Amino acid sequence: MGKFESRLAEMGITLPEAPAPAANYVPYVQVGDMVYVSGQIAKDGDTLLTGKLGDDMDTAAGAEAAKVCAIALLAQVKAACGGDLDRLVRVVKLTGFVNSTPDFTEQPAVINGASNLIGDALGDAGKHARAAVSAPSLPFGVAVEIDGVFQIK
Image 1 (cartoon, rainbow, N blue to C red):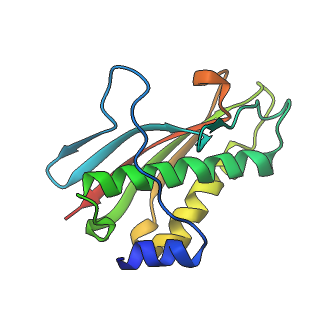
Image 2 (image 1 turned 90 degrees about the horizontal axis):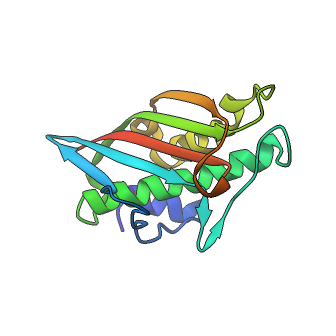
Image 3 (image 1 turned 180 degrees about the vertical axis):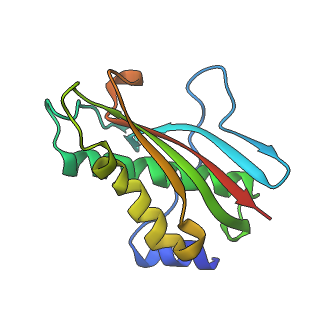
């Protein structure tokens, strides 16, 4: 087990197998040393984490959903790296989509669930650019979807 997965294990996290795509797309594309990971929805095992922020879900629950998305993103990066997550050089950018009401304004706090997990697990390699935006709905009614760009070696 490499340094990144060891740190995740210390945090009580074991990366699952990379989720299969739900439609006609690939889970990631590698161009040179960059890996572009498709949006990962808030799905914990077989359970979809559904809800609308500002309506039936609070910011803390949304942040937990974002954390689940980050775990799926890292699982995809590990798959792109042939099973060796330590080939990850850095997280370049995350884009977080939050299923929220028009008056909900805490999208950054929700996506912090992903950013905090990645920063805690990866240290300097986890420092990234980011966008956190509202969406009127997301696939299957999930609370959060996040995609990312990663540099690998």
